[in-house]
Image (tube, rainbow, N blue to C red):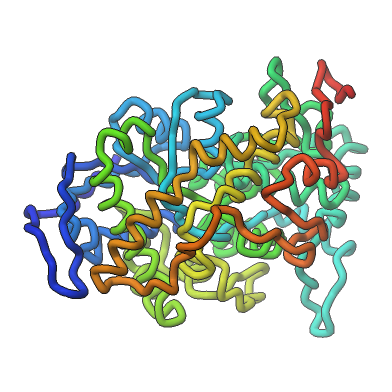
Length: 455
């Protein structure tokens, strides 16, 4: 496990305009965990640009083997915080899997994921996908094009297997969303059966992100949903074809968060503010001047202590493009968003969407009132911490007030139908109505009993 000591000397209070003012830190030596994905970038940049040090923070970054190890490290206190799947703090807080009260004062990014299938599957899908005038496939690609492939596998007595990174990952929910939008049942969870494969047309299982391409090449899985650079890695290796990005699935969807325990935040409020300030500055740097700093960010991420993939592979998506088939590179300027569109603000509505997906597929076994979704969101997502940190940056001349939603009630406006692949809008203030609008998934008082949905 690689460690990077971030920080060389303590700083004193800095009060000049455009310079961070040191807070009265309760703890200045911190260890943060991350998984080798491009969206850990705010952590790497906060060090490389000196933003942690500006706040008087000495930070060690540790790459983690997988998401469970990372979560356990935060809960045990071995890690002070971490780059997390957005579903992890929510699931832990409601007791699905490992139970602990985790909060987030900072959302790390929007978008950044893709769904990739093997070359064999792509060849079988292609006849069912419309072409543009130049002969290239028309995007976005519906999972309806995958349905006849799954039927063919079934006729041959073979299961169709796909990988995702963790049961409460965005990737699991995005893959399920795409499949269901194409009329494919991705399966249910129940308290007695947590495989998520009850009644499934496609069998989804966990594969750590860096292992996705090799697992696909070995034929263990037929496709996967993962963050970058592991979709582009399949293109470079010539072993698979990304069929859709999550930007096409749900425009500007929330992705990772920075997670800490509620206890850490309560015991170290000034330190929590300082960390949040440094991360906001990193996100600003990543997006400023129309992504002008992205090549420099790619160089940082390509280092072995961070993501460790080739510069060209990371740059393929990080610098505003995305390559589907070899040579079919298209402009996607918002494939990775770190600060634009209030990307770093921890919206309650983002939390509610994750909770609705947990309920949709049975990870939340029983119906909950709308008020429950609101309460859980507010217990985990902490925009008040974020806005306090943002206010300090504005006062220090390091950020512009107009760049932050100081007047927000914590809920985004409803996502319009045209921004989602199935044409179904999402309003975070109406979670049960949203669940009822989705054609596949649990609704109302339905539960999963044995191998079937009842109610």
